[in-house]
Image (cartoon, rainbow, N blue to C red; front, side, top):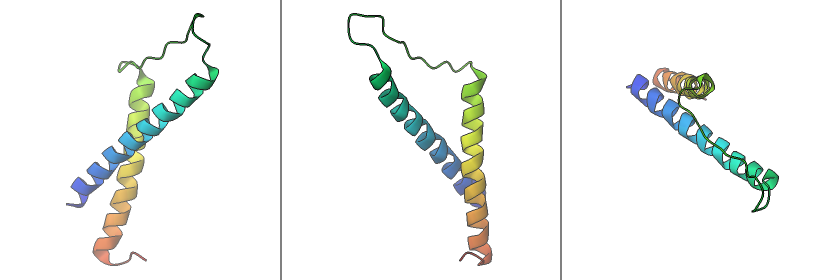
Amino acid sequence: MIYLKSVCVGLAFVLGAFYAIFFLAGIVLRIVGRPQGQDTMGFSISLHLPIFWLSFVFFFACGYLWAYRRFSRERTGTLK
């Protein structure tokens, strides 16, 4: 059960991190973007880029390891 909970927390970390990244990117693009009528910047995400998968694995691992350590300590009663 600890593994299942840890996987769910890892996926939640990924979704939260990507939401925060897109939110911040939207703010930056709005500030830096050019007015209408001029060339505007395009923003796209490709699932074929390694940086997408590396960031996915990084955020998932952070969430998974954090939750696994926390749930393991709860089970043994050493959580303070």
